[in-house]
Image: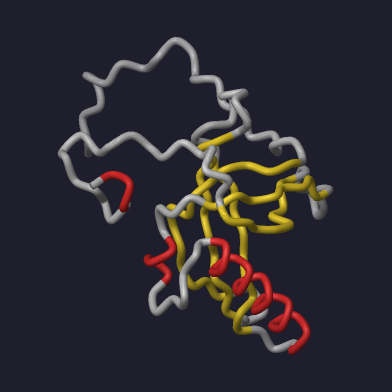
Length: 156
């Protein structure tokens, strides 16, 4: 048994908004990546992007958007589309090639978002439509408090 009597419960839950971001271009960076096995036993690259430039509005900074690349799929056409998207992403990151997905983390890139209608009981969500080299307007995240660069060249 765990004693929780000293834990104070806040009066109100913090306000969170999980509505899709409006259609358009956003400055972002990849903060997480992993291989995931789908329910149909296909493997895809799951990417988590964090918004760091929303055109000056400020209200979407820090929000996360997810994208999946079906690089290992049983349907050849699905795999080819994913390879094209992956190539566009890598070129937009100005990388010659990628040996490990961590190499893509922390590099500013612009992503074009659209809103995809909800289905199967889920609400609408963002879909990444395109990538382009960062316009330079993206604001890099603040330097880590311990002085570490976390592998991000602009923080050294």
